[in-house]
Length: 579
Image 1 (spheres, rainbow, N blue to C red):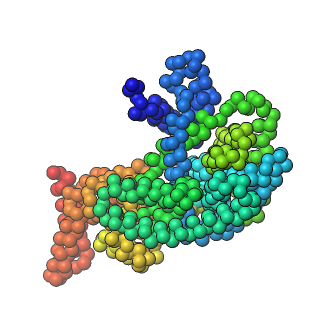
Image 2 (image 1 turned 30 degrees about the horizontal axis):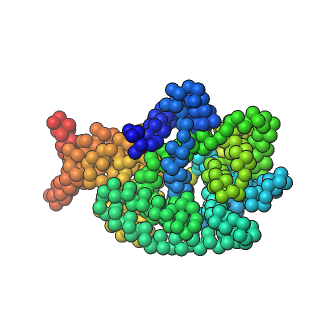
Image 3 (image 1 turned 30 degrees about the vertical axis):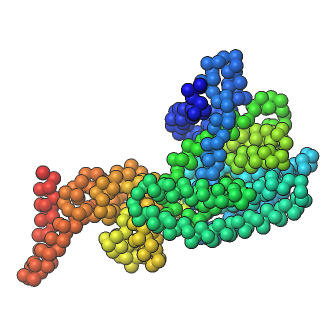
């Protein structure tokens, strides 16, 4: 009996984890997008790469992926969590505030690009169904690559960054009806006309989204409040996974895709104060599983096909970049960007996207796309993604040159979602609430972080900007625009959490002002040594306030009283340091 029969894909999992531990840090050091790295490694170590040599060299079987099905199941989970994270970015309020860019510019980009590419595909002899699918899927760009490039350039808050994000957001939204359409095509292929199926897809998609969204809003928030009140991270993680996979299972049972359900689950949670903590909770799973997904995609690309089509594949990649780039250039310019920034944005978004691998794979499985056409298009999309960083760099240089020739300097980094010059308050109990009230009275923008679900429920009903989360986790502070904040106020009772928060903040922003509350002098000294700028010990300050009142009663002048109190405060802290 095979000793590994109970764990048939152990080799593939260990090989993938080894690659992740070595490949991801190496790519980060070289500033290479991890998506491209996994695609390239999958192609190199997959059955069309070095794994194909394992029959002649058996030892190579230990270092290659000779069985792609060994990662397919986990790769599907990667797709689900990708869609879940995208749903978290699409709150209804956010969509409404950016409606002109999202539904105007984003809608035009997807519609025009899909129409042009769809007509071209139909002209090459593809059926109407296949042409529509190809037109829509090639209209999408790579969210993973574009957002990483914008983040590296610190341009997420610029007008170009906001316009780019709006287009990507609409593309993500457009995935919903596309997944519904594919589900219906797979279930009813050949039974009705394509027009009837398209109408049914729209109706079924709208009804599914509305029902799940309305029911989910009434169920999910109370569940998260109940779990958050227990302050147990493991149960919070379990609930997050349950919502993502559970809603996906509901849509799958309804004849739709699990990826669609995962996106709806993310959209429901995006409306709650738990959104940022959920993002942090799910991020490690999503990163690893997405790596598996792109690895499996790379394994399915036969690079030998490039040699079989040495003319058409390069021409198709170039045609895709030029076609999408030309349409995007006109749209970005029409919606107010300069010629230089429009040129940069058009090249930044001109590549194909990761959704092509998902959608084309589904289309092949339901016989909407022939396998040879799908293989050709996957190679075109993969090569366009590999070229994306170089194309984006060229767009940046050309855009700067065009703007300078026109007498305009490249636009500096702006704000994102209005978050700049704000104060972060970690802990919104009695002390944090008082600080927030005083900041509000002075018209100072602030954002509070609280881990007590009951406090969040009470204060959010009063309009207080509160998010659920653990302020000792620096990745949460990064999502709340710590780099653009003026100060951080720590009012947490937990000494260890406060110390972790100070260390994390100092790693991210060495020079930001940290004002911390301490229970006593000993706690204050620990926070000062950790890196806090100002620490206010409660017991010491309460005693000094009492002494101030006594001195005032005895007729001591305010100036003399303030001097005596400052001397006593410094004496107490110095004595504590000596111990």
